[in-house]
Image (tube, rainbow, N blue to C red):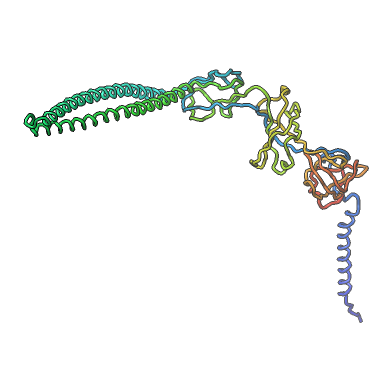
Amino acid sequence: MDIIRDTKPQKKKRKLMWGAGAVGLIALMIVVPRLLPTAVPSVDAATVWRDTVEHGTMIRQVRGPGTLVPEQMRWITAVTAGRIEQILSLPGAEVERGAVIMRMSNPDVDMQLLQAQQQLSQARAGLAQLRTSLQTQELTQRGTVATVRTQFLDAERTYLTNQRLFDENPDLVARADLDRSRELTEELRLRLQVEEERLQVMGATAQEQLDAQAEQIARLEELVEFNADRLRSMQVSVPVGGVLAALEIPLQEGQWVQSGQNLSRVVVPGRLKAEIRITQTQAQDIVIGQVALIDTRTDTIQGTVTRIDPAVRSGTVTIDVSLPADLPPSARPDLSVDGNVIIERLDDVTYMGRPTFGQANQRVSIFKVTEDGSFADRVTIQLGANSVNDIEVRDGLVAGEVVILSDMSRWDGFDRVRLRGS
């Protein structure tokens, strides 16, 4: 008789064994590669930027772009609106003081000058007419005063004669005639007083009227001179001698320009200065008197910081750097340059090239190349003061060690990388 055996426990045990083996295999595939040198990620040594840590004197500098500008420059602007008829001198030409560089026209300016001259002529004619009229009135009034005085004296004599005869014999002069002569005398005395006062008033006000008219003429003369200056300004001349510099937007003949618009600028021959734009976060250490090196792409010029703009514009602070009088041929107005301002000298410090990451006074991790140059291990260092190209290392590295300054953020999960091709 056959006995039926239960095979389910054996199958279950076999499945557990197979599962445990699979888990172990997966664990070996994950752990073992990490333990083996071949699991270290590789980096092409030619693509990384390496630098050697040094010990000694580090010069702190800040850098910024800038432009060479003349220390003396004069803008020439349009006094009045007009049309450019002729351009006599182009940018780059040397001009003397008073030289005409451009001719303009505006019929309205001509008309305004003619109208002002006409008003001045009328005012001068009015002054002559007023002077004649006042003199005539004064002479007429003097004649009136003389006539009234004669009448008064004649009436006074008649009254005195009648009074004497009436006192001697009342029958010689009638009482009515005596009273009439006395009244006529009083009337003429009053008229004489009035006419004399009128003559005084005419003499006093005559000069005031003449002065007022003369003042009006003076204002009209100023108006004529102003319009004449506007007309003369259509012949654009340079107030100082120098070299004409180009405008950002060149002007053309036939173009209409507005009053106050820049027509040209004159650069006075002489010394140049550099205007350097420094990032606002780096400008806090700059002081007047510091040495600055100006790079013209072909020459390096040493200058001195003479001015620091108190305002921040577009995230930068503008500084002026004075330059020596003897400049190389590469130094020209409006030339784009780079400026390095020397902040300070740090003696007896450990420093390296400035990496692509990390700021001053921060603690960062960086890859240090091993002695054989095949690997790079991650180390943590403390940074100090920074410069344009260098940065101080306060802890974590010693002189002679080689570090990688390139961006290694894609290998943040690894503490060691292999330098392939080194």
